[in-house]
Amino acid sequence: MPVAVCALSHSPLIGFNHPAKAVEKRVEMAFDQARSFIAEFDPNLVVLFAPDHYNGFFYDMMPQFCIGTHATALGDYNTPAGELSVAKSARTMAKDVLAAGIDIAVSERMYVDHGFSQPLQILFDGLDKVPVVPIFINSVATPLCPVGRIRQLGTAVGHASAHIAEQRVLFLGSGGLSHDPPVPQLENATEEVAARLIDGRNPTPEERARRQARVIASGLELAAGTSSMRPINPEWDRQFLDLISAGELQHVDAWDNAWFAEQAGNSSHEVRTWIAAYAAMAARGNYVINYRFYEPVPEWVAGFAVTTAVSADA
Ligand SMILES: O=C(O)/C=C/c1cccc(O)c1O
Ligand SMILES: [Fe+2]
Image (cartoon, rainbow, N blue to C red; front, side, top):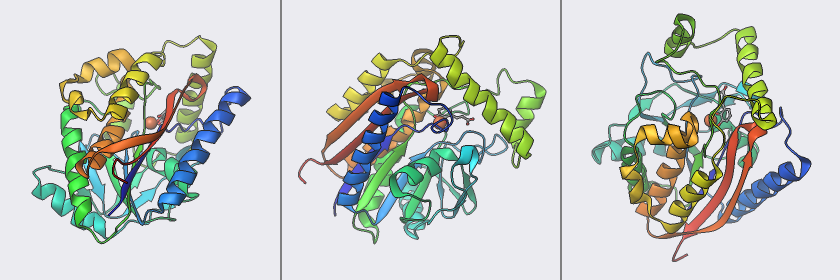
């Protein structure tokens, strides 16, 4: 039963802000590479690990991770809106992951944002082109669980994937690497912002447009060097990619949550999606990364990376 991985950064600013043409071209070539890899692997199931950015998940009930048995994309930042094609195996996998001692939440009405929809759009040209098991991983709403729990989650998902009907499973991680976009934090939020983080579902079109305009402007400021946001940290990103490449995921268990934010920005916790995807792969045997791309892209507020991996004995 072959398994494979694709993990990639996302940014809702793609298409809004434009880095140098050569940079956009290199990223597009990386997407081409990932698309060719996936087309050749021909998965009949994608297990998609992705975060949310206070669009589908709020502090009124914030799980650390959640598996969707139905999922709908909201369509923020011009990403496609609509139903994901959630596989029946989502239920089987939820049962198996719980039986392994990982208390994953289950949602019959999961709402997801660009974290899920962008990779499906870029890699599969739509939300419903491939059966998917969507797994939300909290990467912004503090307090966050220890990152070692995410590795255990990924491991449990990997084991569960060996007992489902689908035979060709792609583990897809969406997020990271170092970046610090202006996603608000509850601890220092005004009353108005706190209310939005606790239960800000269904913003008006004007509210959504204001939020998006602020984030789009933040990318231009980061690129111009006039931003107070934490800069992208290519060295931290390189070390993270080296660790994944070496298959030494167990080291993440010692990583302190505060250290992520200090080194690589609050949203660097999105690498949790990569850790889960690669831990799932590792649970199915040794792997080799056969493609690795990295480029810091401040206009998109992203240490932008794309990797693919296959089983070592494939
Ligand atoms: O949710 C937002 O408004 C912005 C999200 C964002 C910006 C830049 C990089 C990312 O990974 C994001 O999710
Ligand atoms: Fe994000």
